[in-house]
Amino acid sequence: MHNLIQRTCKSLAAATLVVTLLGCEQNSEALMEPDSPQINSQAVGLANPFLDCRTLAEANTLSGVKLECPQSLMGYTEVIYRAMPQRLTEVIYTNAAGAQLCIRKSADSAEVSGDYNHYAEEQQVKVGSRLVKLKGRQGRVFLATFTEQGHAFSVGLYNQESGMSVADMSKLIAAIN
Image (cartoon, rainbow, N blue to C red; front, side, top):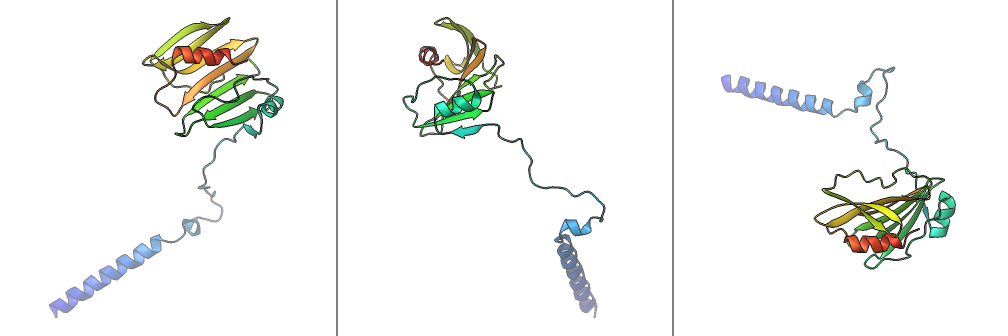
């Protein structure tokens, strides 16, 4: 008799646990009061201000900023042209490993790189008549910025470990207008 009572109690406890767990599976919206605010579980982000373009000329027209830069770079297999209307032109070169080199020119002289990383090394170099700020680490450059004739420029290297030499970055900057 004592065993029968124990088994019955265990069965009732197990059944209660199952009913409780099944009750927790209900849609939580059904438990909310009719006038309570609903929670949107979808992530909300900022809209992408860039428009993809087929050519650099199209990006320049949309941005109102005429950027001149190399059509291709050694080691980079894909080139993407983008514009932020009435704000800036951007060219992104991507290599097979996913590393990117991004060149930007803005309509004004405000900082345009969008790169807020802390770099261990900073220096200024002259490239032609331009005074260029270089940022990087271990003697390699990952970001170059300068202004000229009221426009801000940036060259950033992303998703890569090696960076670029000062000499190579200087050659690239000389090819940008």
